[in-house]
View 1 (cartoon, rainbow, N blue to C red):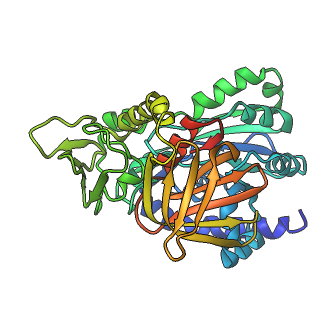
View 2 (view 1 turned 180 degrees about the horizontal axis):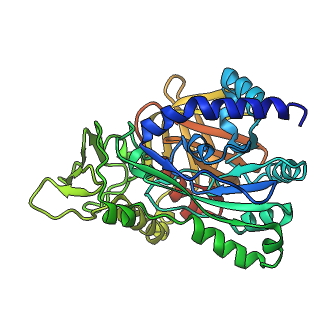
Length: 399
């Protein structure tokens, strides 16, 4: 890279300048890496939007980070990022070969790379899906591999949360694999190692450490992650306020500083953790799939008001399609524009990829050629649409 010397200077400067602020803000304890092999590829689990800064503290050696493409449609931010750190772009609404080639090219040129193979931060406190292609990419690179594990992040800055909470975080190097060691391993063996090295269950960890994560409005926006009420089985009926999550059926729970649910009624909580609830609702949607498929064509499965749909060009600007009610039927997504009444329909059979970005942004590709995103100014669950669409038809998803 022509500007590698400049990128290395910026990285080193930011490392020294930001270190005291990050350590204080997150009460962050971390290992400092002393890699035995260069170049190297770092794979880390993904828990917060701040993970590149957190992982970066453990590596004084310069790295190029793999970043989501949606950042590059924010004009000012895009220009700054490209100039000072030159991230490797990843498009979440599709499987992009270009990203893998860029990673391989960067490593072949002798530069280090950091990637979060889950692709998204965790919704529930448990490390998400890592594809087998990750192991194949590492093997193809011929570089060394360093696995890195972040803990405490889910309770500090949950993906669904409104605010950062005061608790504690750690960043630890799990293992360094030399190029020679990687050559001796099969893809399957390496894949198993990567999943094991990066696996975190936040609730199992905090059951032992019992760290309190203090803050305001601890439960707010939790309905963006949890969308099925276990009492009445209503979809999209949950609402949050302060530290309370409730449903119109009478369910009322408090989310505590330890990250567990307490019932505010005489009934025991249906689940004590977000993880248990999330696992249940995913299976619930799968079990209900045939019921949804048998619904009349004009009966929506779920809907939300004030949804904004945009068409976007990769790494470029977005174009507004419309704003209004969004309906999910058994075979299509429909936006009914509140100004014109015009309906824009997307057949589920034409949607090849769907992904969730940050807290509420839902993005998808149509026939792998057109790209759309759905934004919401109020809390609503993007997982609701993604998991329902996945249950209704065959499409690739990234949560």
